[in-house]
Length: 205
Image (cartoon, rainbow, N blue to C red; front, side, top):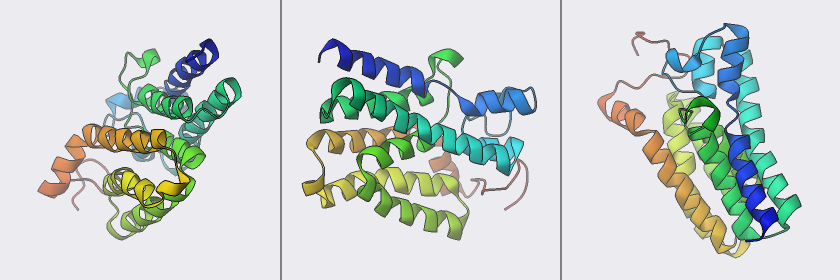
C-alpha cells in the first residue's frame, strides 16, 4: 500500500473510535453509558438508558462512521477493493475497541451497517431484511444482529459475481467479530434470559 492508503486505513480506525453513545449519554444524563444497562456503548443500550430519540441519533451517527471511513478511503486510495475493505474493517475495530475510551466500546453492528451499505449493498439488503423481520417477530436485537452479520458471507457468496474477493473476506471478518462480541448474548439466548428490545433490566419476559 502507498502512504495515502495507509493514512486512509488509520483514519478509518480513528473515525470508528468516536463513540456517539458515550458522548450522547454524557450530554443527556452526564453518565458513562458503559456503567449502565448492558454496559455496551452502542445504539441498543442507548435506547435502554436514554430512550428512543437519542438511540436513533446514535444509530445513524454510528452507521455514518462506516460510510465516512469508506468514502475517505475512496478519496485517498481510489477504487482499491483491498484498501476499502481494510478501511471498513478498521472502522468497525475502532467502534469495538476505541482508542479514546481505553479500548472499551460497543459491538459494532451500526458501524457495520454503514460499511455494508457502502460496499456490499445488495448482500446487506438480503440479510438486513431477514434480520429486521426477526427483530420485529422476536424483539431480540441481538438475534437480528447475529443473523445479519453471520448471513452476510453467504449472501456475498451467492452474489459473488458482484463482489471482489476482499469484500468476501471482510464479510467473514464481520461475522467472526459479531460472534465474539455477542458471546454473552448468544449464551443468554440459549438460556432464555436475553432481554428484548424495550425491556429494562430485571423486567421479566
